[in-house]
Length: 206
Length: 206
Image (cartoon, rainbow over all chains, first blue to last red; front, side, top):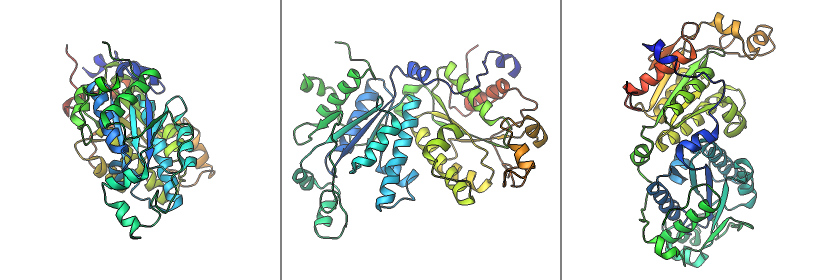
């Protein structure tokens, strides 16, 4: 039984090519790297985009603090060295995901230009889409969804991005989104169009 | 334009559920953890199984030394501590991949029972399939595909699994494969049947 079925399987000596998986998925692998202040809308846009893509039949996945900081990177703290290693590992996982053919969306503050540049280099320029959530600090601080700005202003948290630690804005991001002007749905549409224009997904037919 | 299209997108506040992605893929996420001596056939079976699954329309991906040791884990050496961290990270990535709905196959010697137990616990018992490549040492050593046994016997490599470092065989693996008796194709069929029986993929129709 096993022998008979086995004859139908070709023995290949290496990986399945990326484009074979991409044909299967009817999409091309990509990493959408959301960056911006706490409260700038990264996670909300990431989740909305994930749902939008899956609704369109695409395989998309969000990497964020919930599944990375409590998993792969749970042995990292918040020192400069650990922050860099945090972003490095996310970039490496993003590279694997892109090679698997998946459209991945990462939602991390990722405040340092140098760290994001390493992620871009790791993933490769054709697959890397840096999206700058350029929501003004005062809007982010008013939202304060996790109460972190309040604690940072009270001095209870040290080294908080935007308060007493710098946020280095992207110089040439693939997209800039200000969520004080754009709804999460509008942002998701903008990013879907970005993926369409890059040939990662097909445009919707009218 | 953007506004009109945007109204069709639902704004969700959390991740797409795993089962939505699994429906899209017509499969359930799983991690097949190949373990065994160097030369025992782990990679060959992993690649053959990957091709077999993709031929059947399933999304499968191999994590092995080529894409892990040179990427995510390139800052790890071969000390006991680093070996454990190596396996821990692979387990965490495997968990993310399973949550994405992918059938992932890992091909690492992973000689220590305790490390594999951590990977199983991380991924979860329902998604974790430990496959013991139980090929006799003398067969592995005769194959010696990378010339490593020769170097280990000559004392040029220290701490080589099976020679001067122990391999702890799995106690209750989901499958045992001896590649001195089974071809890679036969092994792939066996593992496809394992996945069918676990409800991860559908059986082929006659």
